[in-house]
Length: 145
Image (cartoon, rainbow, N blue to C red; front, side, top):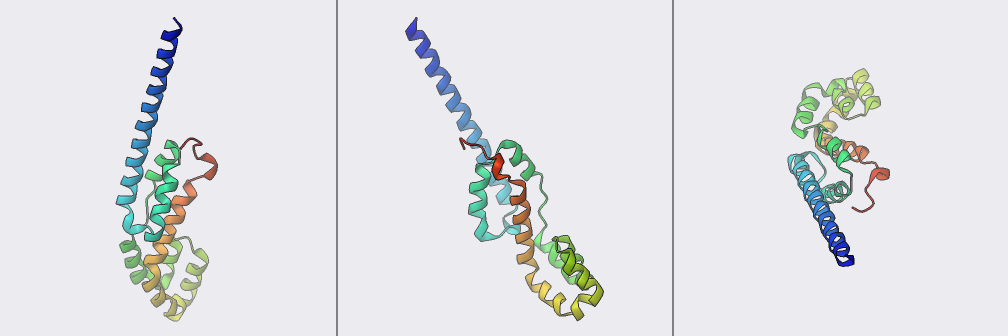
C-alpha cells in the first residue's frame, strides 16, 4: 500500500511537470507571436530584454500585453509629415507639452517639425516599448517562472 502511494505521488509530479511545460510553451508562443508582429515598432536593442521579461509574466499580464495596440512607425511618420506643425504627432506619443508648444509656434517655426520627421521612428519605437513595460508589473511576476 505504501508503494501505491509513492507511485501515485510520482504520477502527480509528472503531471504537474507536464502542465508547467505546456504553460511554458504557451507563454513562449504568445510572446514570440507578439514580438514578431511588432518587431518593426519596438526598439531592436530592447527586444531580447522584452522577451525575457515577458516570459516571466503571468498569463493575465501576457493577455493585457497582447491586447496593446502599438503605434505603427509608418503611420506616425505620415502624421508627423502631414500634421507636424500642429504637434499632433508629439501628443500621440505622450509628449503633450511639446505638442502644445508646436501647436502654438507652428512647429517651432518649422525647426522642430523637421527634427520630428527624422526622429519620429525612434520616438515611436521607444513609446511602444514604454507602453509594453508599463503593463508588466514587476510585482506580478511569477516566482517559479
